[in-house]
Every structure is written in C-alpha cells, then in structure tokens.
Image (cartoon, rainbow, N blue to C red):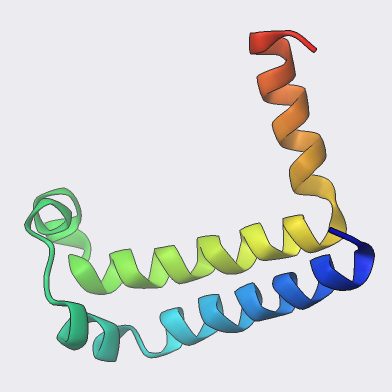
Amino acid sequence: MGLFGRIVVGLLGIAFGVFLAWKHEWFMNTFGRIATIERVFGSFGGNRVFYILLGVLIALGSVLYMTGALQGMLSGFFGSIFGR
C-alpha cells in the first residue's frame, strides 16, 4: 500500500479508535458485556475500561501504521524470532 493509502487507513483507524473510546457506553450496550473482561477488569470498571483501552490501542496502532513505525517494529521483533 502506498503512502496515500496508509494515510487514509491510518486516519480511519484513528477516527474509529477515538469514536470507540468516546462512545464506549453505546458499544457496550450494543455488543453487550463480556464475562471474561468483567472478571479481568471488574474492579477497574469492567467493560467500560476495556472498550476505552481498545479504542486507545486502535488509535495508537493506526498512528504507528500511518507513519510506518509499526512495520519496522513488527519486522524487528518477528524477524529476530523467525529469521529474515
């Protein structure tokens, strides 16, 4: 994918991640509660915290993808495991 495509995909990912973190209550009501997440994050806010963290991680991953840093990080990590 070229530079323009990475920028478009990155901006869409950032927008979705911010929307997910901002409207976490709507996502929780629409998609329901996840029992495993309630057990893990139960004392920290449960599913609300999960949806917010997921949105932030999607936005951060999109920024890394858009700038090309994600490819370098993944090839550096998995390249050392599987060989280049």
